[in-house]
Image (cartoon, rainbow, N blue to C red; front, side, top):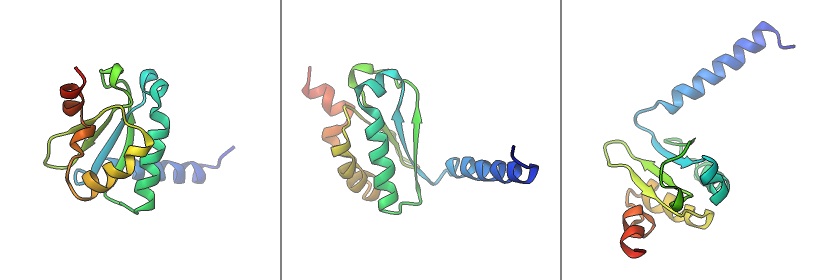
Length: 125
């Protein structure tokens, strides 16, 4: 069993991590991890984003997961939220696409248009 001091330290670390996630200046990468997303390959995509962000030491980027985003046929879906900008939704994301998304969009601020939902819908209907 944990001592009260150990439990309090765990509580403090957890609250600190939660407060980091609330940073309004952070860029958020949100990966759809509902059953549909997981079945389509979202878990390796989430891991690839976490690895790429860690490798580049991007302290202003938070990678998180969410439930169903609502367009199951386009999973894995990743949404990027940059402060003061419109959300960008990437669809049918693979781990191979992550490096380009991080470089062009997260680091340089330019969405990778040919990976977005708008581009996909315009070119696949």
